Image (cartoon, rainbow over all chains, first blue to last red; front, side):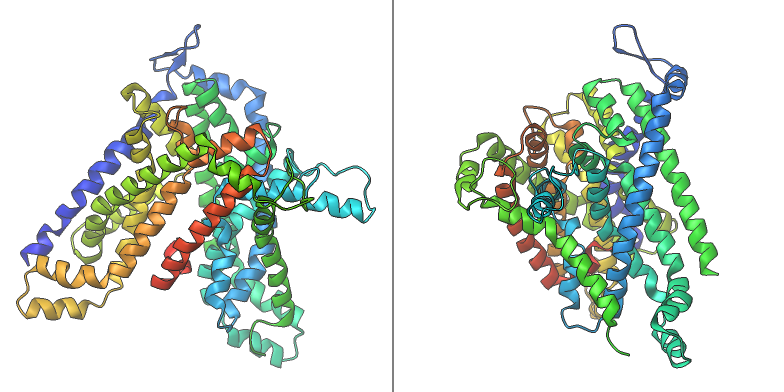
Length: 280
Length: 262
């Protein structure tokens, strides 16, 4: 058919768009990483590794890396502990409200990040839900510092990556066979033993993939560390933004962005390899 | 044993409470009578909604965001749907590689895309302009439209199209009279989500928005950074209600979990 031979022509506008507005700027970002910053602070076209050397000689970069990795690890673990039961519940439930429950589970994804940050400020703030409740119960006298520090950022981040992890887990639960669990139960295993010996091992590949996704998302999250951190939480993402906009030090921003990207790629490869190993 | 098990259900219920907490708290705070974030509020009023109605910068930003999202959606569908059609119906070498190429931008963090666009747009004087913001948002929506529509189109039954072709319809007629009408629910859902994606896009906008052209999420970030009063909560309620309305439309048409599932 002549039409199906002409069908690929329909790809031209989208391809051109992505080449010009996506691929070209991405290459430009790479190119910028080899420019230098002159004594006046203005960018100088160059082809040097000076920015790279300076960035990785700075112990702050090392600190930012540790901060980012630690924050992402803790957020991902918390999110996993919340996402797993919800996903398993959604996977198994026969409720006629299943669709609605699924929508609610992924709701954070549908509500603007700034709105959710504001919600957390109202819950964790000095005069927020948690502190007023604890104070009225007489458990604490001075409010706990729960926002504008790492605690607030970790909680907010865990919540924001959770819906993505729920979807990843749901997609990965395909191999979880109800009959295997029933067999274990009928052979006398307790519900806990069944979970530990049957359900959990079968869902390990899904867990590895969801954890990888959660980690990548929290490494690159900007709004939550920025707003819930109140300027006191420094990670790679906040530094990239700071260097690009406030300091307009584009070479450094580009170097940090490429560095973050390499870290993310490495993490993705690891989580995929782990997931594939676990599948065997 | 049927259903989900009691222990599991209780765990899930607990998590649901946590998921809903920030949203419930924001809604209650929107009706607060206080001057700052105090929860529970000491009294209730509509004063923050009145404030919102008179807040010029937020309104200007809202209007700009709506205009951008509308243009972004139209342009993304215009170039994304044909591409999706080719990927879903065409049989040509390199199709899988191209599918990967089109979806790849969704994998790269918007933080990196935003930086790349800032560096690219600055010499072209496109930062803080409507075209710049539109193009920036399209790096997110075009891949999304292509992925979602390619899935929707390849799930359509092939035999109806084959029947139309057998009865003598030209291929373009088949597309126009059979394929696209069948895909209409998916198309509307896709347009709605693309609108929401653009409307909500914060990080790319933060990079390329300026004081003269600031979208609603950018203006909200600046507001929350500067002060903490319930005004943003009132705005949030308006946004949540609008988003829920759109989500309900999408749920009716295709099911949200399927639509947003990556």
